[in-house]
Length: 83
View 1 (tube, one colour):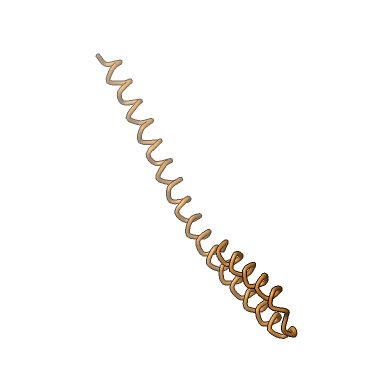
View 2 (cartoon, rainbow, N blue to C red):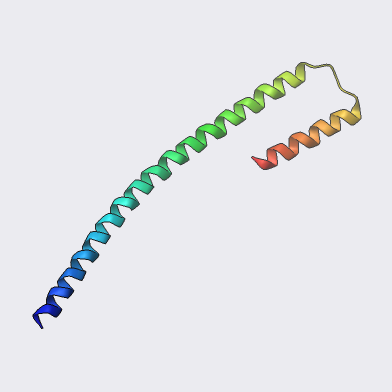
């Protein structure tokens, strides 16, 4: 009977340790998610800025023939769908 209580006590201790370890891991993962979300937003902003710079450069080029212009527009639309 005493050994059963001792075993139960050990299992409860192990469960408590596991619970603490999982809580620490969860807190670390939450911090990591927050950091990655922030990095993701920064990268989205940088991509948007790069897109604007490229668009501004393209506007400086002379007018393209209609067929080429349509290809560029389609390609640009496809690129935006990917982001």
